[in-house]
Image (cartoon, rainbow, N blue to C red):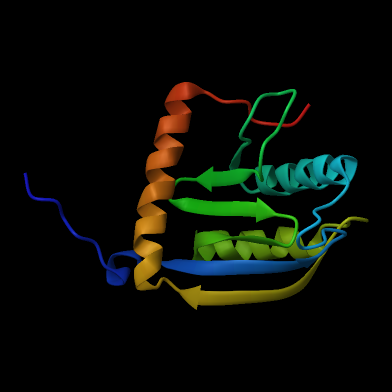
Length: 145
């Protein structure tokens, strides 16, 4: 069976979005674990409001890495410095509204960048969709304790 090679045009309906954040995270140093836990809780609260399923790596007792959020083909990686990923126009507008209006003592939106999907993004989108399907089958923890 011949593999279908996808191009950026196949994902023209998606936008590569970056919500750049001000937060207590320091590059190379990270942030205090209690702040990380709280900011991830806030990200979960925000994105659940607009239909995203949040997935954490690790176990309920020991979260490893930043949460990932999926809703259909929409995907966001939730890092304390930026929430970034691929969104449809409709989901981007909803995310923009809820993220910008959220009141937090740990972060605020510094800048929003929106780019078209580039060649390198095609593999990323397909990997994220495959990971989401695999995770759905495994039913991982969905929130920090």
